[in-house]
Image (cartoon, rainbow, N blue to C red; front, side, top):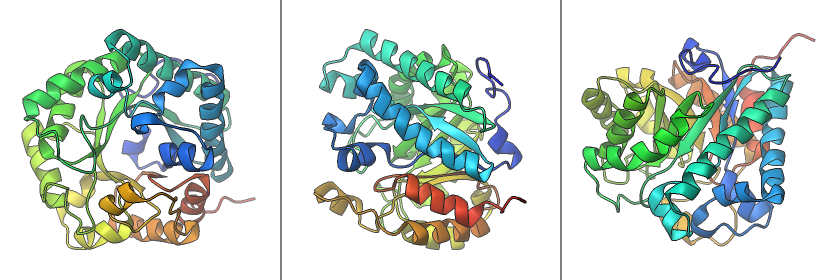
Length: 320
């Protein structure tokens, strides 16, 4: 069955409680396991060559195969985390280049979805990252500034087959609020993923629960759901265990395999891939804490082995 256009923009299946897998640490996989050089930690330039697109296709297919084996859906995240104006300028790409690449990335995923006949549903997400360094709130924007900045890339996604947009590794509430407001104006469902330090707080010191509550308060609860990414479950489990009603707003987790802090990861010259089976068990514990956890994948240091372990631990065994 070939799915046409924005299949789920008005009806995200993960909001109905359906479990969907997603991919792992794209950039760390490409750098440490594929041996590629990614200036500015940007994967999107691979879209510019046939060889690069094939590397990406192999990566996504490995993860889609896990979803097929376990009978789950999948969220296809575009390789566009750095494909916004400031990061693009650092890599020599202007707005016209970036518009073309963002459009091409979603078209690439749409083609992949059309061939993934054994996986259903497959949701396409336009992926965007922070304006500055995700580990540090070093680009201190107001919500209005964040909205103006991210509206450009979100606008490019709105003209494609993208079902939703997801902003990953955000470190301030103001940037999360700006992303959500821009997506609402563009008519796209939006997910915001905050990152936390080893103490379970955002890099600017805000408690995770307070960040989610404040973001909802300033946007009228407009985000489809929230995620936590780029931190090991040990770093934020205590915050979840002490949480309350805001836990219902967490719909996805993309954790690191490593227990290292962000500062330590920045300095690391070798990949810390942790223990896939242990991470899978961690996700099973997270599912017991988070009643609406529906999207599971990985971040830095994870690869398809970690996602498979998550699925093995969290997806009910299908009858033979």
